[in-house]
Image (cartoon, rainbow, N blue to C red; front, side, top):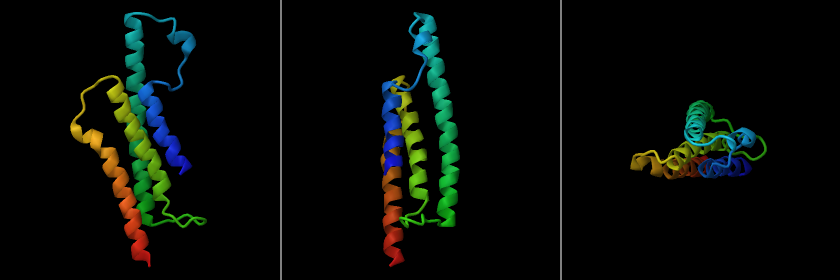
Length: 130
């Protein structure tokens, strides 16, 4: 649950633009250079989000195929690892909305469907285990 809180909170931080930055330099920059810097930060953040989301999706798929469960709680290992994927995808959408890039409607609905799908998968898997 803590892992999910951290990665969902990351999206809120990305949306507000409150992520770590070098204030010493960024506050001194004005005008067009400031716009260029903000654009570069957004592009690098988007590239990192895409890269980590793709890698975490592969890890989640591996855990789901293997059917591994945690020893202590007995929950599928894919669930906590899916927090990375969902967090970075939601961060990707948040950054795009913050910089006001147009996105298709399905992008706004995708996180809710992803979370619901994972939750239902877990419920069905638990019910089928009885």
